[in-house]
Image 1 (cartoon, rainbow, N blue to C red):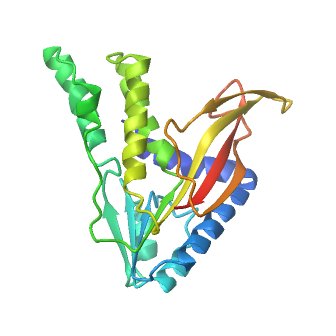
Image 2 (cartoon, rainbow, N blue to C red):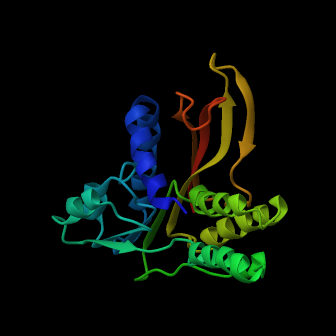
Image 3 (cartoon, helix red, strand yellow):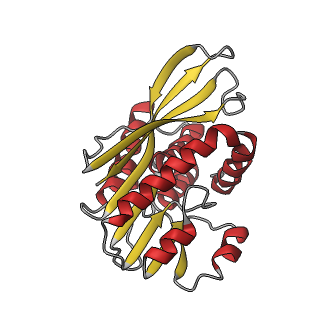
Length: 246
């Protein structure tokens, strides 16, 4: 599905766009730490830890008894980085709770037998923590969970756009359902804004297709995601981000 390629692409884009990214990453780190202040300092779970660009690793490891990092793949550089921290543990897992594998199998089944798996069956899964957390941070991952799956499915031309939108919603809602009230922090891009080479606004696209919680504390900012038009050839891409203490 190209997930490892996508993860590597994130680091490459960060190096190319560091000026525009750093403000977003710093605001993410600050909000996460602010949200963590009011939580029980037992176990913290970071969902979408990736390259740890947006995670204050040492600060969180120092604040909590245990720090658990969840992602579908932990780069070797990150594995080495956390070795020196005794209370940090890595969990390699599908944050969709199995939708990725189900989608892959559905394509294989259709190709082999012509049987189309219902969307409800694909998204009938949920993620489970290895240990009950006292603090959960979903870090710039919510929108990525569905995009990688539905973009893969779209190339196979099995499902309609309406069916894939339904899958987007179900994956996002499943993710929201694991963010326990009073224990969680959600940071996600929710809208894509497009600009021409002269930085004139062209239009926008929604990225979140479910209702986000109001939360007890909220911040919003814009992420200059791609100014060199390498993500989209026809426009610069800026992302509007919301951070919510649930």
